[in-house]
Image (cartoon, rainbow, N blue to C red; front, side, top):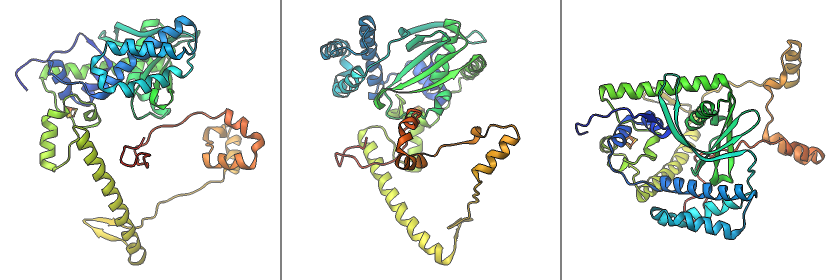
Length: 379
Ligand code: SF4
């Protein structure tokens, strides 16, 4: 890295803090102003944000949950004309936007669209800055929502740990002076499913301290000018992956394939599928051998069958014991989806009541699925 002193910023955005946490080396390059070409996820995400903001502004003013097709086209053409860099992604953006615009949206309480904030400060007085896609002001608290064009979706439980949700919730707490904030992520590629989490005052105070700890780490690195490159999840989003010294040295050492473009991505995916297929075959062969001959020791690792301790407990008697101990048995109850499906068949009379109580627990999983187009990627 050339001899340029990297200094801490005056105000910290969520993307900057997130980037530093995943790879200080990438953060230092960005801070130094190293050039990069934004990739498709960044362009699609930011142009979609402009499209949805323009459209929601229109429907808020019209007090309508959805506008007609000509409005949708007008907004699309107008916003796209200001983004020549998005021309290669016109088809993808059009279908994302049309699907979004045709979904009815409840505008109740929507008070801010693309709310810019600056001057929000942490307990130690450091400044935060950013832009919240939507702010809804309610009677009890405030809801902040960020729209995601990600191709993966968090589980419901994971939203509370999401850094962006946490930072926006904390910012809303300081901006609006409320002690209850609901943070939401809206996954627009998945029918606008919402993943949300509620934060009370104690949670919000903990988040404030967490922000300060993260900023302490940035300032300490700037003191020593030590910005290590850290390979991890952030590499997939990194602007500098194409010319990263760490990736280059790792791939040389390990003879690994590095994903930097569509071609290498396809090669790695092909190799992954071939390895999985081979692994399945090898596993079957080893299972057959071990069933007859026992486990095989290789370098201190026993490959074969191992007993997994597993016990089951009767539900009814345990519920009675809990009640006798003045504990709520429902704390330990879990309704199994397979049993519910059986119930739907055996007791259709109560099915609609059960269905009404269902909450959406979907999330994306990394796995393979047969794609419709044969050679194309699976959705
Ligand atoms: S590719 Fe990974 S290791 Fe390299 S700069 Fe980017 S995030 Fe850091």
